[in-house]
Image 1 (cartoon, rainbow, N blue to C red):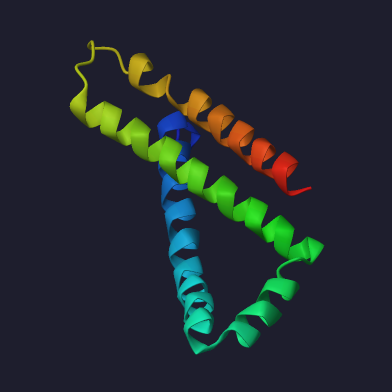
Image 2 (spheres, one colour):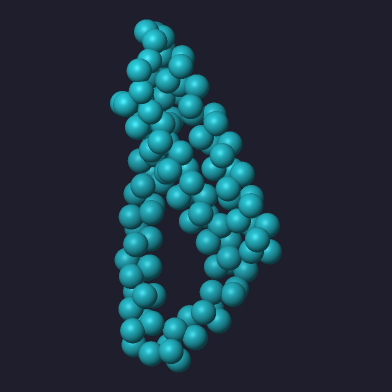
Length: 115
């Protein structure tokens, strides 16, 4: 008997949910940094100097990659729900690999612009 966890759609589901959870964990940090801008320019400037570190740039790349993965799999879900499909599930599954490839390209383009 095949495990449902070996199915491509399961991994698309996991990718969409995990990227969404990690983006949700990032939001409080984002709001904190935006709050620094309200507290004064000196505090925000200090953080912006910190954000020039290579580890932070790598984290930014990871964030862009998470955003593009979440977007790609979200568009896949919208297409599954709203577009007419034939009776085969293969057409619906065909969106998984392009979503991942587009996400990777977006991440590489961002990385090229940051470095």
